[in-house]
Length: 191
Image 1 (cartoon, rainbow, N blue to C red):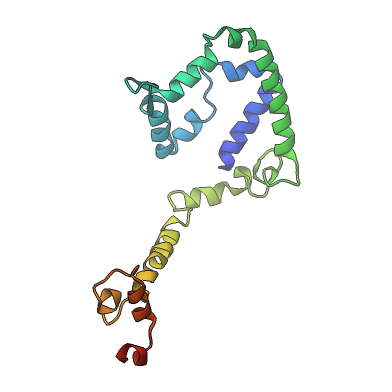
Image 2: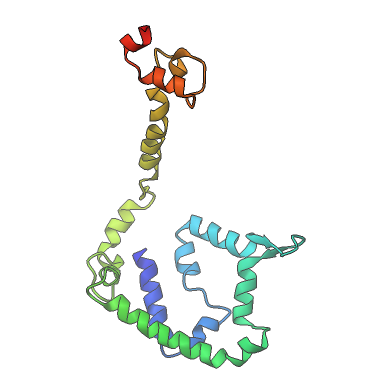
């Protein structure tokens, strides 16, 4: 992630004085440097731009959604978009400058991740740690899913009685009589 932030920062440094860089059809900030190292990212990019489709409003024709959006941004066909291109470029320059101010603000966590800001967690200072942890699962999905999966089954387990579901009544738990039976003490069940 820090490597990607460094790439974005470097691009914004250039684009704050030339917003037309955003409208260059050859622009690809991440693909070459990141996709070469991260096959899953390369696969995602390929899927997004070459396979991810949406149906036309009448449902008859699939369209490559991101390709259409990118093509319209880079080579607009709409007259209004063509007339406002200069204003769009100016706006992009202003936004890049604002983003860089935020990225460099030492009170925010982003500065800590940037090599240019000598951030403690930047790729420049953590290159070895990054290399050592490549291929590791950096999310807690497996743990969370196993824990939540366990708790998802807890209500069912509460109603088990000697291996029989629904206190052996065979009736659904939504039946109020069954719920009373499941929560009843042994004396109450004997009558």
